[in-house]
Image (tube, rainbow over all chains, first blue to last red; front, side, top):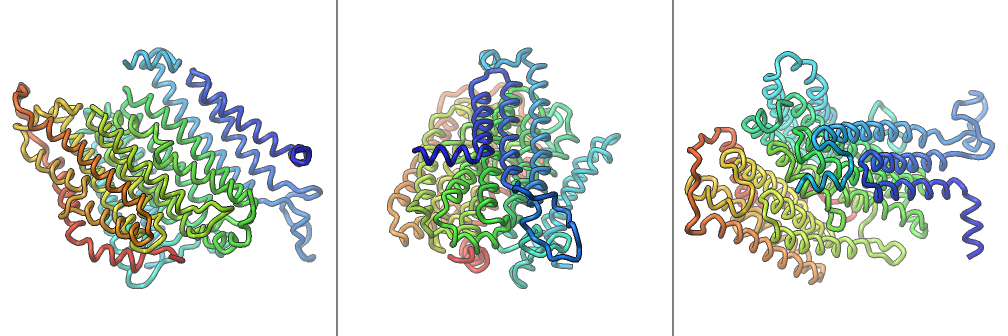
Length: 125
Length: 489
């Protein structure tokens, strides 16, 4: 039990990721306001992006640009660039999803005059 | 030239989609002929690609010359090529069908509609070809974003269904991305074949199990597997009539293709990770989906809702087929996937015609069109035979090979699930026909409407395809057995 706690606190980035992810999920599930749901959704996406970035970090490493072209490359000295590239793409995907979501929200508001899920469900009946 | 075919197939609809808003800014009526032309070319190129793959082997396409574990790889193998012919042909039929319904039903947003459909098709092409887990994620999201927008394109009740789909779909995508980052953290690679080589050494890893679980849950949401299917019936029911055939026949099936890729091309599906036998788990999920989906379909009043739940149960049957762990079951599952895509398209075309021409939305109202349109009932009979799985249609042979595979694996629960699901499907189609042929229904007062040629054409082609797939099932299954098998099955 104690070892498990120690293991968790030695990796604060994973702990942060779990907290943000579950926080976003909680907001998404419990709030009735559609825009708040979108905020929860975006928090959740961002937490995954945070996780991707955090697994590429290394202690004492620098940006992945070769310091010298003559010496042999030591991978330990450089942060892993690939998760950052994935992160950029994931951010773009997240922004596009959020844009479509907000457009849908605006259309829903114009049609039903409300952003509250329960109001809308009542009007649908 | 032939090694460029995957890129050509992908770029055709993409370029058409990008240029559409510019070209059709002033002339909105150009958008239909442009999309039809693009998709006709795409069907031809995919057939050439399939021919090429059968005769000269698979094409491995590496982007901008970066070699495999580093670069992004696309592979046009037998499975992807067969699916692509189906995908482009059904997309063409869907666009031809939309000619009649779109101006009224889409609220004037015709250019938006064609742009989004072409974007969706190019993203689905990317999913079929991608052999890189992150590339797969990107295309899954492009396809999902275009489907959210397509469902909401006409406004109305569909907006709320599209919003729910967006929230759940994004949850699925986030879980999938989380799974991919777990696998990357464990193995250090994103390429499927590279990952398949490294995984046997990592089987003790808990991160591997977690990552795979997240990926399968994410893809399960995308393909409306039973515990995660809540978004699907509403979204497909309230979507405009020219949108739902394309979505119902293609999006969930291609997500299922991604599931198959990860199950067989990344994992060797017969392995047991931490005492979890993957095949048994997937077979149980499939059996649940097949039975629960068909039961829920039986309880529906709206026609499109009933067909959407039917689609959910068929996803389950396909999963049962591919989870038997032998070649017969896998070929049967993939063959059933082809059939199911055609049948879903035909069902939603029928529902679209029933609403647009006769104003019928619910099962009880169907009785009103019985006398008016005997040909519509004829098409419905053919599709019903396919959905239930009676002999001359492809549905029968698909289920037949799935059951043969299950018997070969000694998996009697799967056989029972397929049979129960078939009986339930029979039950809801009996309910449909009972409503049509019930006596004493008041005939419709509406004047007889001329049925557009394009509706008749699309319905005729899909109904004929259901029977042709049945008549030529032996060569198609043989083709799948020869060309589309996973590497270690």
